[in-house]
Image (cartoon, rainbow, N blue to C red; front, side, top):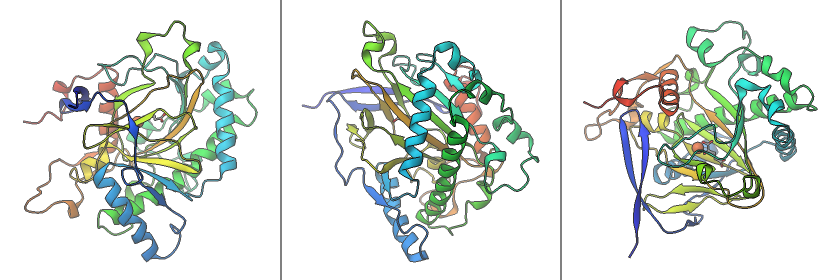
Length: 360
Ligand SMILES: O=C(O)CCC(=O)C(=O)O
Ligand SMILES: [Fe+2]
């Protein structure tokens, strides 16, 4: 008989409980987490519709899939990985110099019912000055100023790492370009015109991260305070593009309440849907619970990229996801407010009762 436990997630509607099998994670089959080939993404419309139909089915089922032939050169990924390793290889004091972009091991706890996260992170938020599609980066709205800090001084603390800034920005730019192409495919997958979301991704939330999960001997003895790499959670914004090294450890909660290993596959990125896109799709596309364990002796590195929509654009449930049987479940809202409130909730600065999201 299968045994179950529960995962508790903090959401803006209050806590949500998910049943989870206590069985160890098992490998996902190719049907469960499919590999989708993007080699024709720049081809004709029929080819893009074909990709969209595969993404639609993955998005409606598990909310996770791999992409291959995604157009980001392996050479660039290797350089980015070297930059991440050089950054995390510094002393804590040196890492602290990139202070507002660096979070140390155990400084976050994404799931309050699990342990602190045994990972360290460096992140780069959206900056119009690096966005290849923005002609005049100087003009920013209030919300953009909040999310997209133009304060670039943190790079100074990384000056001594050769090409760190250049490589990090280059990798961020390529992922932004790919994420925008993916959002056009997602519009098709939602049975909308391809350009449906174009106006809300002109200056989007776009956070590029380097993550290091230290190996176990680096924390002696085994530290029960920081057992999980990153606790069970869902991503906040629209889509996540994730590069992971060959360590393994990323686990995805299936619709049957089982943990599945999203095993590393060379040449691929993992794509998953976040809560904001789930909301806009009236829950048709799934924002799926996932977590990372790194219980081996060696480091695990990953590089996620989180795409939201423009923080000040009001977005409503996509019309194709509403009909008589499926009325809109959610009010229009900006991705900026959604993101800010979710981050505040995660940091304990907002309790769900205070928020505007309480269901009546
Ligand atoms: O490191 C990974 O593989 C996943 C990280 C993740 O889920 C996150 O940062 O939201
Ligand atoms: Fe995540």
